[in-house]
Amino acid sequence: MTTQQQLALAQIPDLLEQRDLFRLKKLLRSLDTPELVELIEERTEQDQLIIFRLLPLTRATEVFEFLDLEVQRHFLESLSQERIADILNEMSPDDRTALLEFLPDDLVRELIQTLSEKERRVTLELLGYPEYSVGRLMTPDYIAVREDWTVQQVFGYIREHGSGSETVSVVYVIDERGVLIDDIRIREFLFAQPEQRVSELMDRRFVRLQAMQDQEEVIDVFRRNDRTALPVVNEEGVLFGIVTIDDILAIREEEDTEDIQKLGGSEALDEPYLATSIWQMVRKRAGWLVILLLGEMLTTSAMHHFEDDLQRAAVLGLFIPLIISAGGNAGSQATSLIIRAMSLGEFTLSDWWMVMRRELASGLLLGAILGVVGSLRIVLWATVIDPGYFGEYWQLIAITVGISLLGIVLWGALSGAMLPMLLKRLGLDPATASAPFVATLVDVTGLIIYFSVATAVLSGTLL
Image (tube, rainbow, N blue to C red):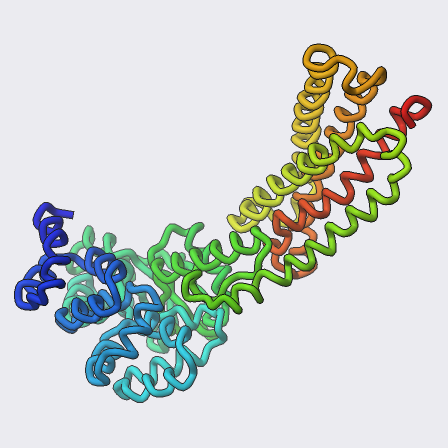
């Protein structure tokens, strides 16, 4: 941001308060689109409308496309029908489709009627694709040329039609039937001779997407091929449109947000946090909380099973929170790491044995570390801080806690790693294996491990 833009931003609050629209309009011209988007989203709804109405149509459309969906919806409810129609007709088809997906059906029907015949046809075509398909993301605005054209002809075509294209960084080559036969980066044309044919620049190696392909699959395709845009074709290979990286980044953000919310033991929110009603928030969170509560009730059943052991050796109860929390933490760590690695495509389900071996090794080492720390704590307490606190069998108690920590941390790491992979194998979302769910599972099984070790070590002494 330049010094001039910083000075302009500093003056805007005072100009809004004074309602000095003439000077405000002049200052807004000096700001770039990102600064205008940030400025609008930080202001009150009344100020947002004032700023937006002062922008010329082209700039207003650019800003509108980058605004949060809630702000867009507010503008649609507040602006005149003529202004809304102008903006919607100026918007790129993919951004317009994303907006209409967010709005109620009755409002969508009303807005579609405001579009020009051409834009209405494009919009209805894109909305006709399944909700999470690539077709919903694509735009028909691209540069397509023929292989017998010269480089000079290509540049002439770009100068004439490029302003309406979503991107000119990639030029697509089609045959007489519209079938895609190659895509060429613009830099290849820049370094070519004007009289060279397009066919001389072609290598016929390109990546294409299917209109019915799932959006999540496309994220990996973009990452592997380092492209800012990819072509979309039908079953016959005819070029329908393109998908650009900005739309993929938005999808990736939505997927990451959904996964993080599920990892916390909640259903994914359909709207931003502050826009979600209290009832919706409760409904999204209550289901998992009830399931986790029922799961924790099994912990009570496990403790009841070992009630006699606790009565004979009450000292064992002191270490129950330590034991089960260590296993739950190890499981939560493993779950988070595995789900993230799976989302990045770092391994496939066929690599489960490799993953299990790694978690087996790391679980043993982590369990050994925690086991030593837990045992040393008991030794230090029984010999230095408060001798006699754990009774005459404190050495056996230290061994019990150490071995239990080793076993529970190992079990937590293995279950936390394998559960997401099992869910994916069953066709379920791996993020469902949330950290709280894994922690609850390890709590119950951890008690069984702990008291089983205690029975083996303390048999004939405390038990």
